[in-house]
Image 1 (cartoon, rainbow, N blue to C red):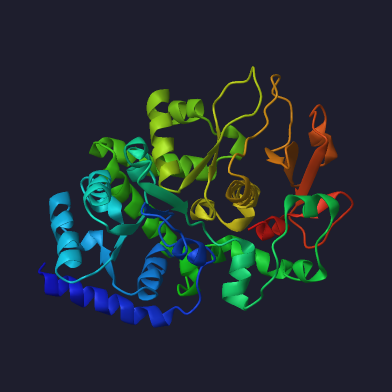
Image 2 (cartoon, helix red, strand yellow):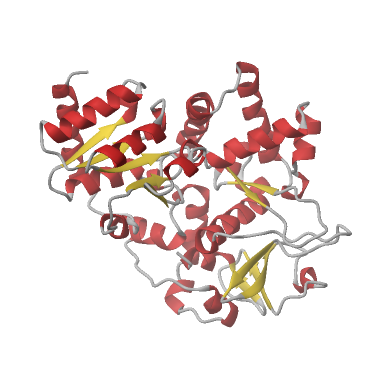
Length: 399
């Protein structure tokens, strides 16, 4: 394309910003970041990265929006284009969408940082594209994760309900408000599709999610990993097996056995799907246990493999893992040496470990037997507190 074509696309993108007056909560913190280093916004497809980049560009003077998937993959072409926008047209900030489509995104970032005053803000739907070369760009790039909607953010966007965040201490002590509890009736709609920001405009979000999954496998993962066609064919089979299986039955060993692949390959594929925001891996806490992870899905991917009644148990754990990880970062699962029952998760809050159990039928305080932590939280998918059970949806107010 010629320069005029890129300018036309930029102007069209800026005109579309007015359609999205509401902003995701990380907007202000991203805009106010200081320093020369580039900023990378990472997150799954459909989470709102493109809209946010356009909003950021529209809020600044001398800023230009580009999408890498409209450009030649050759990094030299991208370098020359960005240099011309700066030197000939006076643009001081470039907002580059889906940088992983370039052949060498890390090389472009290093070159821009070392030889120009430009500050690049970019996005990627494949964290692997940047993490694979993180050591090369560490001092030049600050990576920021843009998550799916928390339940609290969903309520603000969908129902114009604004409520304060809760912390884990509030859940442990029952310190929430009546207004928080009144939102329980929205939780299933959130969990079954509303968690996806693009569902704000998409009447059938799961159909679009299926297309996103297929695009991740066919386009995103091959853009950053060398897999042959036969290997790419295994990825949908792996997701189907995980989506239709009980959570506790998934491991590298189980995937290897059921898919007819080596354990090494099972681990490689799971890690790629984790980096593409389709799966979640949680590793066990403690010593003397096998270090295979608990393999969960990002919600609501599990609903592509069965209806809500069939998949509700796994979906609850998917949501809890996502909410806890978004808040605490380091989340583990508990595993006994003897294979006995234990709580689902272990997090650290104010310097102390907290065991978290996502309850269903037949689950209760007995899950905590033998767990040597002082603070224990039992969550249940119900609208109101019951004895020691805290409503699961309240996790959605942690962020």
